[in-house]
Amino acid sequence: MTLKIGGMALENGVMFQTQRHWSAAVRDKNGFIEVAGGRKDVALAARPEAESLPLVRGPLRMVDAVVLLAQVRRNLPDARLPLESPVLLGAVALSTAAISLLRRPRAREGLVATLAVEAAVAALSLAPAVVALRGSSLAAYHGAEHKSIGAYEDTSGGGAAGASKEHERCGSNLVAPLLALDVLGSLVVRRAFRRPPAGARVATGLLSFAGAFEILRWVSRRPGSRAARWIMAPGVLLQKAFATREPSSAQLEVAQSALQRLLELEGEFGEGDLNPATP
Image (cartoon, rainbow, N blue to C red):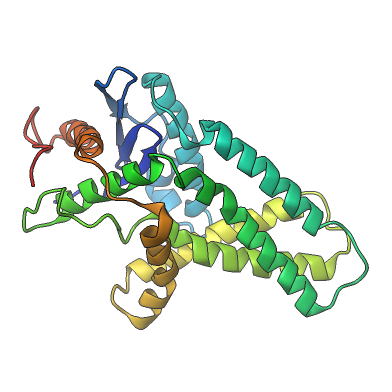
């Protein structure tokens, strides 16, 4: 049975995961590929009781992801996580400051003005991701991640080099429903309170993420439907526009090395069975 594999691009490599295991590969400063992997320290979302809880399973996956990144960093010290980029941290700081300025308390606004502010906030929240992907290797490794997963899932046996750099399960598909729900939730909060109580924004963001996750679960069960195409369209556009880039053969080799390790951990392949150079 084909495994359901997720992944994440790193600044200098790729990380893959299943419910039980993870693997990662990076190219170090000397040009060599370093690979690590193992069983996950924490897998809350993989528990049957958690998977059956709507609006809870999404946030639990977020917790799992944070713990997993720490595990990857501990086992593969040369891995450079996206959040470690000084440029990205600077973009986050500027974006946060601009959002705080837009949301400062002011005289009672009309509905249209409030909606305009929240739409601007949503756009600003995307700025750090755009900065991180532009002019870095992150987008190319993101493409390598998708190509490797796509080639693995392709029953015709096509190689990774010819696979699409876009993938239907990419996290970018969360962006549109997440921002839409966040704008709606923030609009309700701003209309209800001139000075929102502490934690209101955090609660709105968490509920928006949980709701967006449930929307994507619903979409995944209706592939090809008109609703699915409309909901997925912004994510596909984001992938095509800037979230992914065609990787080099060297970057694809790193991704294939990580995938090979994951499949070994899952018992699908023995060492050396996956050929990174498959056209």
